[in-house]
Structures are given as C-alpha cells and as structure tokens.
Length: 247
Image 1: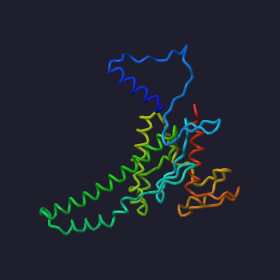
Image 2: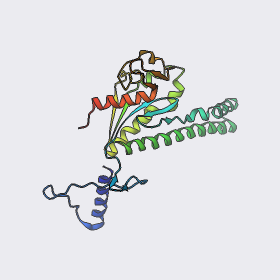
Image 3: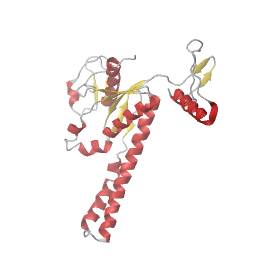
Image 4: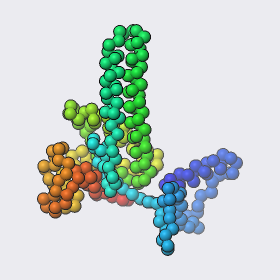
C-alpha cells in the first residue's frame, strides 16, 4: 500500500512536470508483481531464501496505566507519565502564582511559567502519541482496540489523573485518522468483552481477575500463567479476528 501511494505521488509529479498522463497497466497484459522499499534491512537474501517485509499483519492492543499499552506478541509500551514527572514543578509554580497579586507584573510572570509547564507536558505527550500511533499504523494492516468507557472510568478519583495523563482518547483519534490516510483498518471491540478475565489458551473465564489488583494469574483449567495485560492483548487480537475476519 505504501509503495502504491509513492507510485501515485510520482505519477502526479511527472504529470505536472510535463511528462503527460500516467499510463495504467492493462488487465489483459499485466504481470503479477510486488514492489516495496528496503527500510532498516527489512529485505534480506539468505542462501536460497528471500526475506520480505510484512505484507499483512494484525495486532490487538490493550490499554493500561502502568504500561501505556500491551501489544499482542510484543513487549509492553512503557507509560512516560509526563504529568507525573513534572507534577512537583507544576505544583510549585501554581503556589507561586497563587501568592502573587493579581494584575501585577510578578503575577503575569508566574502565570506564564505555569502555562509553559502545561505546554511542555502537552507537547511531550503529543510527540509520544504521534510516534507510537504512526509506528503501529505503518507496521500493521489491522489494529484491534478496546472500546473504553473513558468518561465513566475518570469518575474513579484514584485513577482519574493517571487516565487523563495517558490521553487514550487522543491516541484513538490519531489511530483512526492515520489508518484512513494509509489504508489501514482500526476496529474497536465491545467495552464489555472480558479480555483480561479469559484465558487466551483454553478460554476459561476467571471472575477473580475483575479485581484490578490481580496482575498475574494461573488458569485453573490449563495451568497457563498469565500476565493480565499481555493476556488481554492476545484475547483482543483473537476476538477481533473472529468478529472482523480477513476479507
């Protein structure tokens, strides 16, 4: 798909440089072919075999707080927690602002200092989300995500600040429009799908895992030891493939 977009872009450039209209392949005399770009040694010749980059790939993504997300068959993506990293600095700047007389020059300086810290947090977070969403869209043809009820989740005062710091809604928004740009598919699973509770090996459902404090558990049916979030990402992938199979 990316190569096709490059070819289309080149055809437009050639047309406007005076090379004439692009010539499309004839369905009667065309040859089956496949072209791609070599990036970071993704194409290799080993003996009598050729390694090509992935043409189609599907992943399930489980969102988290300790780790930003777990991606099926990958290492977890750590949560940078930009707000927490600058929380003390922000609180100090806000206290200084509160102590200044409104309308004074010092109050204006203190207000700008608070605004710059907020801007720094926002820019760091946006940069992280852009890089992650771009990588996932470029590397995968289909992405399955949870349909989180974020507005309800933030009502829990113990989790609200951490959830808002993650900016899951903005991450989902980026995934959606980048998928549209690059011809990918993003599907959201039902919020009530028990991705964490179900063993991805034998499908035994363990209601004890509803407790968020349970981070690892052993399936009483098949004996598989699960990391809560890794197991959820694998279940999201399986359920996504079941609901939205390859066309």
